[in-house]
Length: 335
Image 1 (spheres, helix red, strand yellow):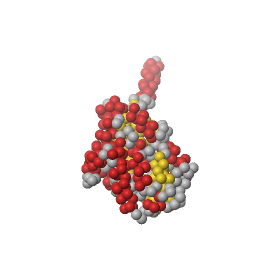
Image 2 (cartoon, rainbow, N blue to C red; image 1 turned 180 degrees about the vertical axis):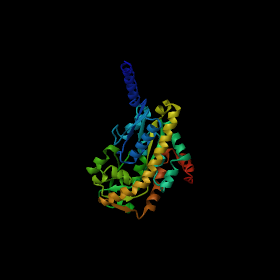
Image 3 (cartoon, rainbow, N blue to C red; image 1 turned 30 degrees about the vertical axis):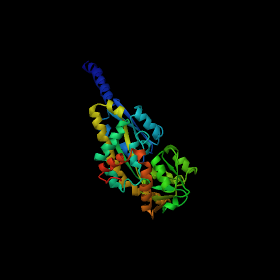
Image 4 (tube, rainbow, N blue to C red; image 1 turned 30 degrees about the horizontal axis):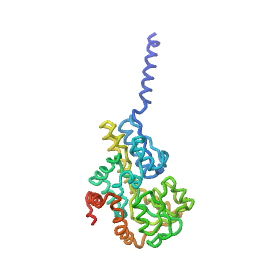
């Protein structure tokens, strides 16, 4: 009899234990990303997810959607600004229509090397950029390091500026990048990221610009991209942003955790970029990609500083905005 009386209690305890073990998260946050999972965006998404879910023991769930599954980057950013989508990872150029001062990051030859990029996305420089972003409804959690935007094309090797003539290049909807390509002698054509592969494959444009890891992840070698030139005119930064409306609704402890997770993801993607970019380069070369270096990069930099910067200064907030950022980076003012 005692066993018969105990059985229902044991059964109830078992059900309660199972319920606790499979309890649904109290909060689910979606993250949209334009690039595939096996890219730098994937490293950020997975790192952010791991940090949050481990620290909350699964009470907060992060669900990542890659390769534009939730729409193109501009559409996702609009939804983040409205608060209907919590988070997104997107190229910096796609944030510029929402906050023009972030466009200063697309100025050609702003950064000379990765060390300068890291300085420009941490500390006082990062805080300054975030003051711009939050006023427009975004909070930057992570700067995704995606290498310099090396130029690739289907026609010929590019080793000097004159080789750009007659070639059409896909660029994001960025006034600064459009001006840069014109200054370099190419023909820029704005095309959405989701349509880029098809445009290359069908010959609508001859080329595009991306780092080695992103080039490989997006399989651009299968879209007629036979030649790549290591030109250092702009470093591709892809911020992970959270909607400021969503962020303010989070409890203070979760706000702190989200910021920590963003910093953790930034550290992880930097390590990944340093470790994997050359491996991706060598794999692409083995598959037939022809890589060139410029013979006259000083001429490219001269064109950028003498033509593009003066033309685009007001577009990115004016000389005062540019110099405030340069000061935060420990660089001399632009005169």
